[in-house]
Image 1 (cartoon, one colour):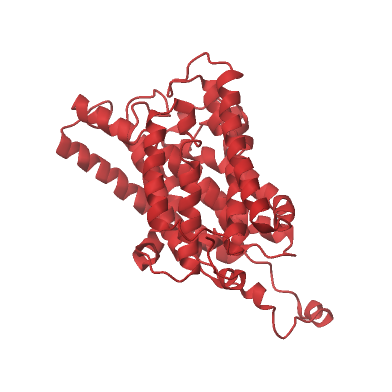
Image 2: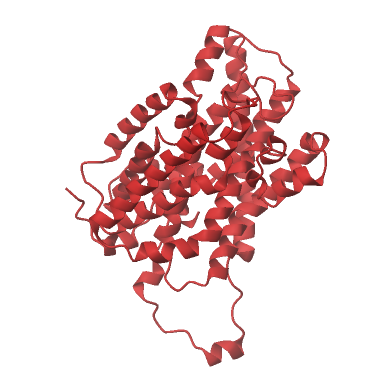
Length: 409
């Protein structure tokens, strides 16, 4: 049974619950980073602060795939909210200006902080840090480049590719009509994700082994970091938005069901071969969670995710994610390789969390929002231009679509 929500109602809907849900995705990345037995920055010392070997192993195992789940969620969500908020006929330059302002100001600030605090002494030259600054570093297979400077910024290389291609991708996807076409292409995107890991497993060299994963550095790059391979998640998000907008989301797949699927998918990721835990094991639950949460907002159902605190946490989640290279990896390096009793280790993790949340808020409040307000809109036309091309008295209702922070992102 498909939802009976009309497409017109869907187009008018805000998505506050999706905004709140973003924080839990960022939080899963936080716990993943805090549990690492090998830091991504040299000398790759442990991040995990627990001295008790049993607890440390449990912590590392329990959150060993949480970061991959969170990043996959963000990639699918990116396609979803861009398609949700897209307006036919919008100039490509206006779209790209907003998208670049979304990521580059925050990225440049954290890049500079990382270079001053720790990365400046680690990178060997301009060939290491310049690709990172330009967010093209994940096209390089060398770990000294693709995880250079601020390691969490690797995902922005994929986001940059998504933004560049979205104006072209949305055109044919808008032409898709009906349940069979939309769900069929969604299935094809999932098949593409499986194909990426099959190629990485069987055709990419499995030596030398990575210093931070049980597979080779080349397999990790091809199966996880390479932006081209992550396009399938982004396009799936675009298709999911079209499905919800068309009122084709199955009513039986609500938030509770999708949350249960996410738990099962995560359990599968923990026992699956390592590279299949990146995306494949959890992608259907992630898609269900995003689609069901958006559909709940469309139908006006109340969820705790749309509360003011959760929306605020969702708004700062991008900065909260991006600063973790400094607030976890760098701060942990200042503690050396010391490990701690359970109460002290919990305090260390709480300190990481507080520093990350504060850093995320500072970026949102003093970098991201001022940049968007100042440069996010085209300059008003001059009076002479306005006289030559007067604006209509009333815009079409479809052009006044209100969107939440999730859709703005």
